[in-house]
Length: 343
Image (tube, rainbow, N blue to C red; front, side):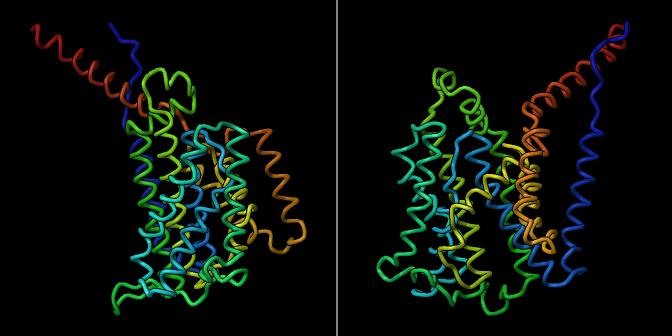
């Protein structure tokens, strides 16, 4: 008697593996085929991808509205700028330091407000981002340089032999960080922490009733997202060799919010697509500079109408389906082996 159980195959896994190999080869070959201008465009694509991934932890995984995320980005950049120019600390050593500084700031600032929900949290995060920007403008303790910012930041270096001082080297630096971030966040999505975040996003009350420490997991999301944004600020500061408050405005936070919404909340491939749209869009429509924002606004409206889940929405429960598929395959093999054992 034939079983009605659907057959599971690993073709989808092999096809995904081939896609990843092709994309990897394309990313490796790309900077050797184009000019520095297009390499720099790809670098800023990587920066926005890293920032989008950082906000996706907060907005996509847990569903917390954060419209002040550029503030964490600013803290990472200014931590690098001040410690490098004033105290001479090497930029690469400051990469984890900037991430930790932004994470610590997120913990201290978000602890009192983490209980807020929806629009209330959104308004508070807007205020937080603006307070950071205005504080930088006011040049506290003569450290931030006011409106002029901090300049003269060194290039990242590993001893005297390897100095990251060209567009090609910065391209590989940022995309190596992005790749490591994607691997880490993918593992996190499939971990106990990722499942807890999903529970909180879907039904916070039910999650708390089930024993999930809602406050701790929300705060953890903010801390991880801020740390990744701080790392992005470090790379940004090293590339431009100058940071100023105008780079971390409310509009920047809005662009990061759009990256997650356009790509798909909680979707890592979607965030990459959203980052590409936000960072490469101005370059594509540079001849129509006067109408860029109009076209962008129209694109957002069409997205909300026809693709409210984003370009590449996350498939919730895909891992569970895969596990069920493997279980089904095991059952079919045991059914085939059963007649032989009776014989």
